[in-house]
Image 1 (cartoon, rainbow, N blue to C red):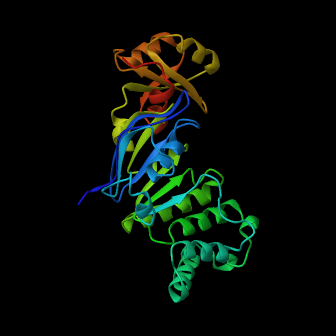
Image 2 (tube, helix red, strand yellow):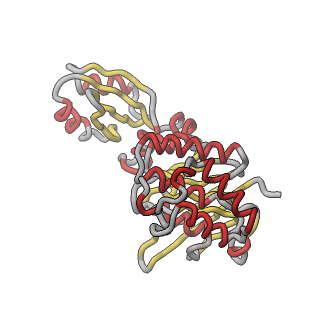
Image 3 (cartoon, one colour):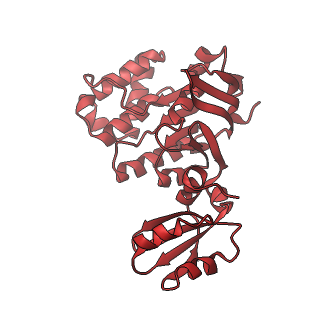
Length: 306
């Protein structure tokens, strides 16, 4: 029995001359919360549609829950849940009516449907809104309803396409608590995001850019393996200092964070603190720990490391 929820080899999708997904390889264990991190247009949504069978790949192979996706799309649908990027339920139906509609799609009837719907209304704090039209709900409430609908049939594998893009930080944090509850109960989850704090919550993630996978691993491993030193620089005229630093080929990037400049220096530059101090003798410099944003910058936006 396969221990992988998702396995992809050489997965590609081309629209005319544009390659949206380019030779994507994935091995995602069951029970894992796996993230796709990347800017808009990097291939996150297209990859999810390929993995759910909603789009046909130009080339490559996919196995979902141990089965080849090709030829098994219909049978696998009942084992999958999918929450789209934009709220896709019915605004003119109430919360309960939306759940009843989804229940009917999955063959839930009678007492079984009523029991599952009541369970989800309670679990996602929607009981008080059960008669409210979905279109009049707040972003956080819509998000909870969409997740309730996506998990009504207790899927083994859940796909979430930027599910928190329209909600506030408190609701985002609460949403992730729900995801960890689902993961603890055995649900495998693939979630796409452009929020660094969400990406750090994943057990593992891929950084995507222009259809390519630029990095893959746990957030901790990706930060530990960053091929650069991270220097914090403080002092006067930081905007001018930044412009001066990024002229050097050994500097991958420099970005202001509050009263500091966060500077990424290539690993092949010996004594990076001394290097920055020589360039900026009137400023204070210190080595600091990398974060996931540094990994993202090096993977997608920094100059080539080497």
